[in-house]
Length: 203
Ligand SMILES: Cc1cc2nc3c(=O)[nH]c(=O)nc-3n(C[C@H](O)[C@H](O)[C@H](O)COP(=O)(O)O)c2cc1C
Image 1 (cartoon, protein in one colour):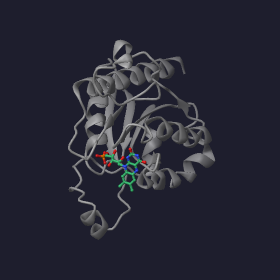
Image 2 (spheres, helix red, strand yellow):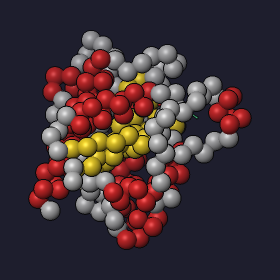
Image 3 (tube, rainbow, N blue to C red):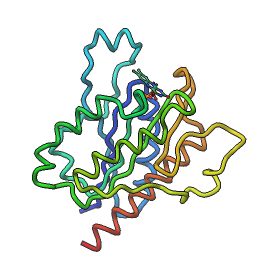
Image 4 (cartoon, rainbow, N blue to C red):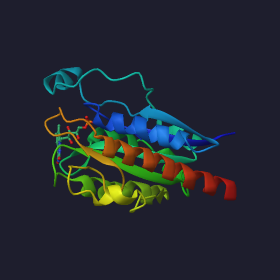
């Protein structure tokens, strides 16, 4: 059976989802790896979503906590809310107590990706504060470090992401992930898929 990499995310306005699509392409580019996209459930009422100008969700299926145990590796993505992950994703993680109790996710690699509206808005704090969730599950946090190469040192154009994982800046919502940010997302998918495959083969 193919090595399963689950890309699990929450996205309100589509920026995180766009990165997720590219991460999937990167993960799928590794031979023997099958990547799947999953969204977590929305927790805000329709009325609130309407006031926030949130578009309808895409057709990507909604994951249930127990489905996480089918994966060999993960990439988790969320938009920043006040410097940390959106509550929708936290609510999903908070529903994984059963998996935590049996440590079913322990030893599985997991990466993180994110979107903020502004520079200094929490690209790194969002990733860093999400690591606690992985730690309690015994998951292995896989940062991308500087493996993306020259793109990590870009100074001429705005670029989201960091050694913690890929990222983008949404600005007022109209800014879309750039070519470089998408390349970094692809790299992250490929990188984590490669590590997931090695770990599975060694088991
Ligand atoms: C309640 C709320 C809090 C937010 N907090 C932050 C923040 O701390 N820093 C920041 O840069 N952006 C913040 N944002 C902007 C979101 O991060 C932005 O909408 C998101 O990155 C877009 O990703 P998406 O298109 O995948 O939903 C916030 C947005 C909302 C609605």
